[in-house]
Image 1 (cartoon, helix red, strand yellow):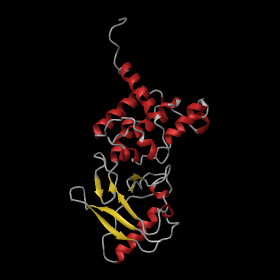
Image 2 (cartoon, helix red, strand yellow):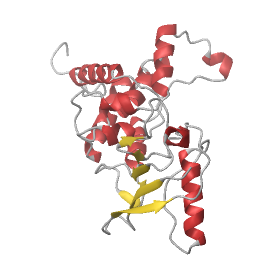
Image 3 (cartoon, helix red, strand yellow):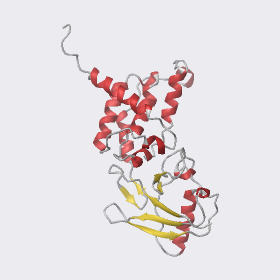
Image 4 (cartoon, one colour):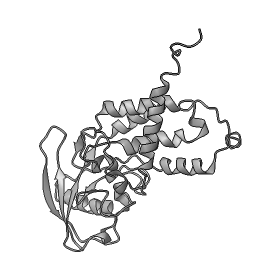
Length: 258
C-alpha cells in the first residue's frame, strides 16, 4: 500500500510553517504509524531532503511521547491507543493522511511535529513528594488501602501525560491530566499529609502555564489513550474547594481560643 501524507513542516517556533505533501514508498499494512514515518524519513534522507521531525520513545503506548494529530484527531482514528499503537491497516491504499503537531499555547512548537511539553513536568513538580515513610515493600503493605480506592488510584495513575486532552480541548485545558495526577496520590493513605497543598499548588501551576478552563465537553476523555474518566476532574474540583476552605494549615486560624 501507498499513502499521501500532508505533513506540517516548520523549522522552529519563530519560522512560518506549512503543510507539505509526500507520497510514501511501498508500505506494509502491519506497520505502526511511526514505522511508516521512519520509512518516509529514510526515503527523504536518501533523496537529500530534511526528514520529518517527530517525537518517539517507548513505542509501546507507555511514555506518551509519540503524540500527533492524525486527520484532526489526537493519536489517530481509534479510541484507547496512542499514536505508536495506530497501524497502517487503519487506512486504505491511496488515502491522504493529514499529520499535525499538538496545537496549544502551553505546548510551544520545537520543529515540525515536535512540541515542548515541559509545562506538564512543571505541574507535576509543583505537586511535590509524599512525606510518609513507607520503608521496604513489606512495611508499605501494612498500610491498608480499600480496594475501591486502590482501583481508582490505579485508574488515575495510568495517565501517560501525552497531552491529547489539551490538544482536543477547545480551551486547551489540562484539567484531565492534572486531575489524574492529583487523584492518584489523593486517593491513597500515603498521599494524605500533602493532599491540600498538592491540589492547590498543581492547579496554580496549571493556571500559570496558560492552560484554559474546563467546560466539560468530554473531548479530553474521548481522545485519552488510557481512558481517564471525567470523574477525576469532579474529584479534583472537590478537593480543591475543600483545600481553599481549609486555608493554609501552616498558618494559625483566626479567632477561637487564644
